[in-house]
Length: 177
Image 1: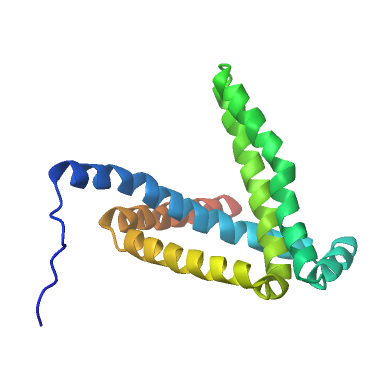
Image 2: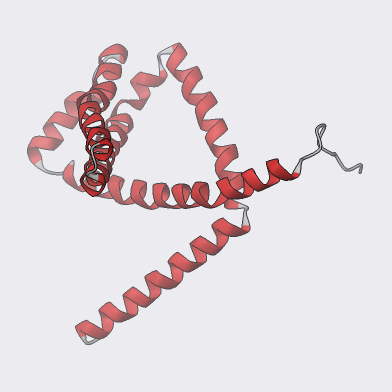
C-alpha cells in the first residue's frame, strides 16, 4: 500500500491555527452532544403532556411546505432575542448578553430538534431540502469523526466521565446509599 501525502504541504502557521481551533471545536461538539441529548429527552417528556401531544400529532401530519414553515418559525421568533443579546454585549452588559444568547439558543434548539423529529418525513420529501440535509449531515459527520479522533476531544470526554462519576458518588453519599 502506498501512503497518500497531502498535495499541499502543511505550513507551521496552518498547523498552529488548526491546533488553536481544535480545543474550542472539541468543546463545542462535546457540549452540543450533551445538550442535544438532554434537550431531546426533555422534549419527549414534554410531548407526553395531553395538550402538547395533541399539538405534536397535528404538526407531525403537516404537508411538506407547511412542515417547513413549522420548522423555521421557532428560529425566526428567537432571532430578535439573539440580536438583543448582541446589543447587550455591545453595550457593556456582557453577562446578560451571554445569558440571553444561551437561553435563546437552548430554547431554539429544543423546539427545532423536536419539530424536526416530528416533521422529518415531510421535510425529506422536499427535493432541495433532502439534498441539503444529506450534504450537511455527511459534512457534519466527517467533521465530528475528525474531532472525536483528536486526543484533545478524547481527554475532554474522559474528564467529563470522571466528573460525572465524582458527582454521582457525591450524590449517592449525600443520599446515604
